[in-house]
Length: 173
Image (cartoon, rainbow, N blue to C red; front, side, top):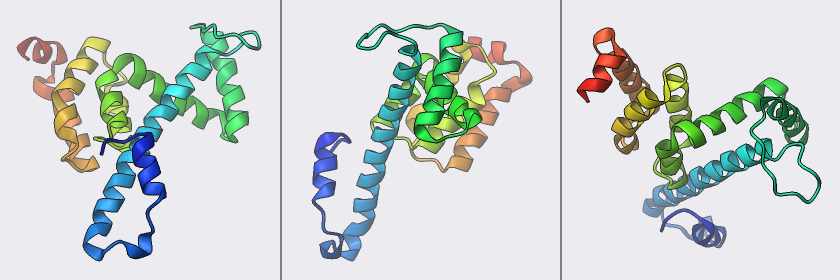
């Protein structure tokens, strides 16, 4: 069952004490897919909250003004009881996934990647231009589900350093 409200309802009805020992890992796996889906939804909510900052009450207007984003980050930190720096890091992750790495966000939302793997993509690709970031992510995202976090980080480092020249690598791909 794909992650989303139906899976949430099914999992909410599970009595763990009645699940057989051999089925418990599948229960954990299903819950992990649902958690990844909810984390993707949360990151999408963060982006919208930042874009909607400073709008009039009742408005659905969205802005892309950096000053409003700074104000929104502070407000979100207060609401979530997070430090300003942690909130800013979460907003940056959300924006990278939404605007630069939508294939990674889609994999997170589908429960194929967890938040840590999504973070690894965003972290490794944050200092390269959008085209290179998207090319590397597209090349690795479908296989990343089968890798450990350490393996994914190794693959990202490898692809970021191929031939020591990213531009040549992108042209070869």
